[in-house]
Length: 480
Ligand code: FAD
Figure 1: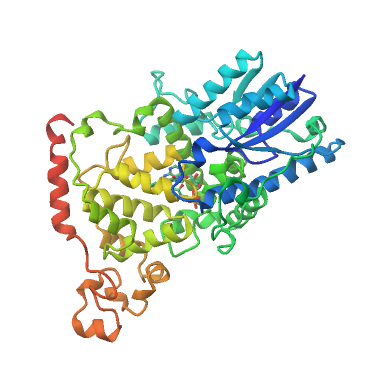
Figure 2 (figure 1 turned 90 degrees about the horizontal axis):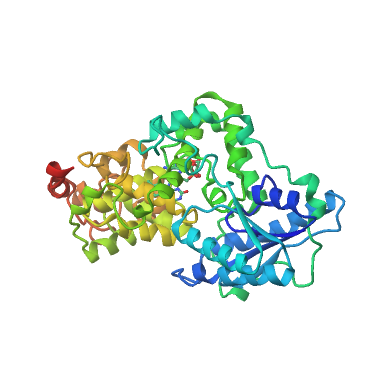
């Protein structure tokens, strides 16, 4: 028999569930990636770092498959790459190649589930099978349940149950290597098109020296494992190299989540345990999305639909464009706009600021992040926004409102992160860096930062905004 492996968010040639199962099933295995126009056409810009990340990672995947085949005594292999609607191209290619089955790794996003069911249906009509496998999470769907057999909606008991269930067998790699001689030989036309050929432009990914592909994921992982012990202490400080920066690689599967969890478990210690906890949050939000696809449009908790947001367009624009007058918020938004990354502590701060200081619907912030984050992942992003807006499962209680100035003092005490992204505040003395509007005229002249001219005055007063938010959420007191 022959098979087709459809790569999506799993751009690697090792520890790959679908590839392994295809190689077990068939003696001739083709590999394909589709630049899906259903996704690409909806992107806000033709210079999208994610498209470039994928394109460059595919070049490595193509070479990786070739090397895999040769190492197993095969004659080399290649990746077929197509551009167009995946739900049409995959069935057409399967038919053209005459394969018996298409293999893919499971996706839990509602749009992907729909796409995959359309593909499966079309394949079935042509007498071709479709099978998908768990690969991008450690535990999926109904695997971790409460004692009553229901899905969890609170993280800590979920995490404890997850930790009780995990063992070496669940984290074992799928051994694709010995079977790789069955990869179909490279055909003329295989290989990865240039960005321009799919209508996209290069971004600043290279200038930022962002590691891409499987080798990039490996490099970041090795770098992180050497300092994982410090993770728990350093992870909340955006000016410090404390986190792994692996999120984009997890998003596109250039690393294997099983290998990451296995590495954390074998290291042990408080840093590794804390980091494993973050990977469990990732599984948790995927599970939440699968059981509660309504979170895509609505609050996790139905009573929160009663909340009426202000949705002031000018305030929203100021937030997007890093002009709020709160340095920690503006520096964070510049980091996002310039690099496509934002540190987790800052994601929490800017999300809280948008919803609780500006009174803007979390869905607008969620969308902005979706358009700009390199690691954008529907499940984690929705979970993070609903957490910050207090509308989510196991969310921040609504009456706990981050103060952007004290957050800044606590997590960027010397303003190092702020100054990195807001050079206009470079000379502002430490004692004013978190709230520069409190500088008097003499200090403003001395550091050559005039508030209202060189840097904006705050667009809202935090204390007044806090009161408005408490009133806004007060509607929940009866029903919620
Ligand atoms: P590390 O601290 O090294 O963590 C390792 C990995 O654990 C991450 O790569 C990620 O896969 C996972 N992880 C960590 N924290 C979380 C979390 N809270 N929820 C789910 N998974 C987590 N993460 C995304 O991957 N994509 C998003 O679109 C996204 N949007 C977010 C939006 C908001 C408002 C908030 C508060 C958080 C969001 N997160 C998102 C979670 C988190 O901020 C990022 O995963 C993290 O900052 C990525 O950096 P890192 O890889 O260095 O993280």
